Amino acid sequence: MGRWPKEKVYQVAADADKEPDEQLPRRMVIEVFEKTVGDRPFVFQRCNDLFIGDRLTDNAHEPDDYRFHDVSHYAFVAVLGWSPVVRSLLRLKRKSDAKLDETEDGARAILIEEGISTWVFGMARSLDYFRDMGTGELPLDLLKQDHQFVQGYEPQGYPLWVWEEAILQGYAAFRFLQEHRRGRVIIDFGNRLLRMEPLAP
Image (cartoon, rainbow, N blue to C red; front, side):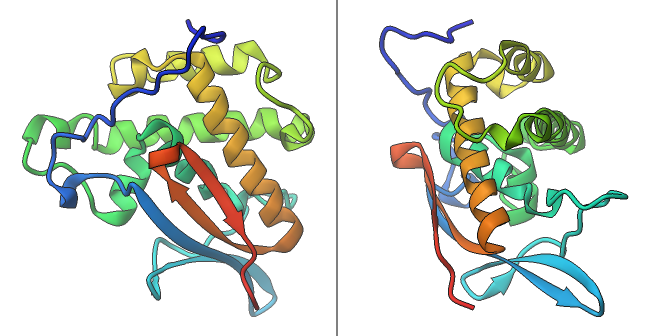
C-alpha cells in the first residue's frame, strides 16, 4: 500500500482540469483564533478578513481542543489535494460536473472525511497528539483504516506515506494551536506543506 516509497511522487490534484473557481486552493492563509463568548471558548476562522465556517467548540463533555481540528482538513488540502469538507466550506464544489458534484463533493464524501478526522483524533489523543512521532512511526492500522474509509472515492489510490505526511503535518499545526490558542495556517499545495505562523492578538 506504499508506506515506504523508493521515490516520493505526489499525485496530480484531482481537480487540475477544472477552472480555478472549482479548484481547492493551491495557496491560502487562514487565521484561527480562540475567543471567549459569554463564559465559553470558541474557535473562529478568518480568511481575507471574512469569517468562514461556524464558530467551533469541542462538542464533548471534557475539553480536549477538538475545536481546533479543522487544521486536519487543511492538511488534507495541502498534502493530498483533497477535502470535500473544505470544498463545501469555501463553496468550491465542481458544479460543472453533475456526477462529481453529487459523489466526490457531496454529503457522503463530506461525512467520510469527517469520519477520518474523528477517527484520527481519537487515536491522536491517546498518543499525545503524535508529539515526537515522525515518518514511519504512526500506527499502521490508523493509515490502513484511512485507506479503507475512502475506497470508491478520489483518494482511494493515494499511498499510505502521503496520508501519513498529511496527518503528521495536521497534528503539528494542531499542537501549535493548542499551545498558542491562535495562529496563521498556511496551505502550500505546491510544496505539499501546511505551515503555521504566530498570529498577533
